[in-house]
Length: 394
Ligand code: TGC
Ligand code: FAD
Image 1 (cartoon, rainbow, N blue to C red):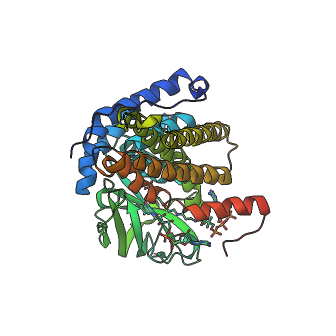
Image 2: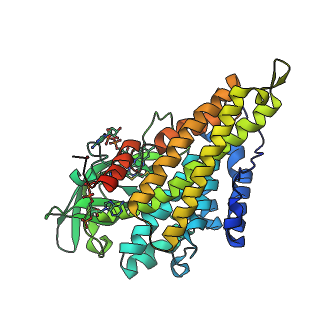
Image 3: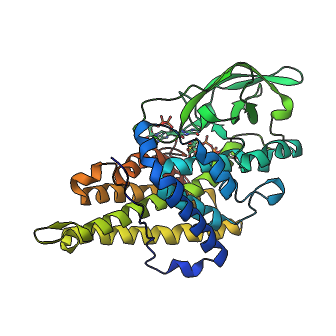
C-alpha cells in the first residue's frame, strides 16, 4: 500500500516560533522540506521491506545533518543546540530510523572524535563523516550488558604499537553499513577506553540483526572482534572511564528528546486531519467528545514537551544543562510520543494499522526509541537518584 502525500503541519499552540531565530526557522524548513521530498515518499516501502535507504547518508551529509554542533574547521556546522534539536525533530517526524542514523553519526561518532580525539583523528575522520562519505557506528552495548555498560567484557590488550581487541557488541545502529566504529573496551587496568575501528581490519565483522518489528528502515547489527589489531593511534587520548561513552549519550539523548517529539507531532497532525475528514453517524469523528479528548490531550502534552526541549536547548547552549535534565527530557518525549502514537492509531480505526499512514510505523519505531540510549526505567532512576541523592540502580 503506497504512503499518502505528506501534508504535515506543525502544531505550535504556545507560539514557540517566537522563541526561534530566523536561522533556526530556516534550518527547520530546510530539513522539513527534505523529509517531505526525499523521506516521506519512500520510507514506508523501505520499512515494509526492512531495508536501509543507504542513499540518505550522502543526502543528510550534504544537508548538514551530521555533527551540526561540531566546528566548521572539521566539516561540522558550527551551529547551536536548538538548531541540532530542530534537525532531529524534523528527521524523526519522517522516521525514527532516519533520525537514528543522524544521531549516531553526529553525537555518538563525530562528537567523541571531536571531544576526545587527537588532532590527527579529527582531521582524518571528521570531514568524511560530516559529508556522508563515511558512515559510523557506536559500540557500547554487549549481549550480556545493556543497561549496565560498566560490566562490559570487550577488552584491549597492549601489543606494542597496537592493541588486540576481543569481544562483541550487540544492537548497534548503522553497523552493517559503517565504515568506522567507535568502540568502548576495557584495558588491562580495567579502565574503559574508546577507539576507532575501521572496516577491513582483519578479525572485525558486522553481522546484520534480522527480524525487528521496530526501526525496520534502520540497519542494526553486531560488532564482532576476534583478535583485531588496532593501531594505538586509533585510541582516544583525551578520555578514560565510563564518562567517555556516557558523555556522548548525553548529546544523543538530547537529540532524541527533540526527535521523539517530531514523531509525536506527526501522529497528532495525522489524527487531527483524519478525524476532521472521516464521517461516522453523519458527522466528522472530530466532533465527538471522546475523539476531542484524545486530540486535546495530545496537543497539551506536545506543547509541554516543546517547552521542555526548547529550554533544555537554551541550557545546552549556555553549557549549563545537566545529564539528569537531558534524561528527564528524553524520557518525557519518548513517553508522550509512545502514548500519542497509540491514541492516534486508534483514532484512525482500521486505517491506522496500514502503511498508508505513518502512525503504525512511528508507534513500532518508538518502542526502540523508548528503549535505546537508556531505557524508560533507567532514566526514571537517574531522576530518582538526582532528587533523592540515593542510588536505586544497585
Ligand atoms: P556512574 O558511576 O553513574 O558514572 C560513571 C562515570 O560517568 C559519569 N556520568 C556521565 N557523564 C556524562 N554524561 C552522563 N549522562 C553521565 N552519567 C554518568 C559519572 O559522573 C562518572 O564519572 P566519574 O568521573 O566519576 O568516573 O555509572 P554506573 O555504572 O553507575 O551507570 C549509571 C547508568 C546506569 C545511569 C548508566 O550506565 C546508563 O546510562 N545506562 C544506560 C546505558 C545506555 O544508555 N546505553 C546506550 C547504548 S548506545 C545506544 O543505545 C545508541 S542507540 C542510538 C540510535 O540508534 O539513535
Ligand atoms: P537490559 O539492560 O537487559 O534491561 C532489561 C529491562 O530491565 C529493562 O526494562 C530495564 O529498564 C530493566 N532494568 C535494567 N537494570 C535495571 C535496574 N537497575 N533497575 C530497574 N530496572 C532495570 N547500543 C549501542 O551501544 N549502540 C547502538 O547503536 C545501539 N542501537 C540500538 C538500536 C536498537 C534498535 C535497539 C533496540 C537498541 C540499541 N542499542 C544500542 C542498545 C540499547 O542501548 C539497549 O538495548 C538498552 O540500553 C537496554 O539494554 P538491554 O537491551 O540489554 O536491556
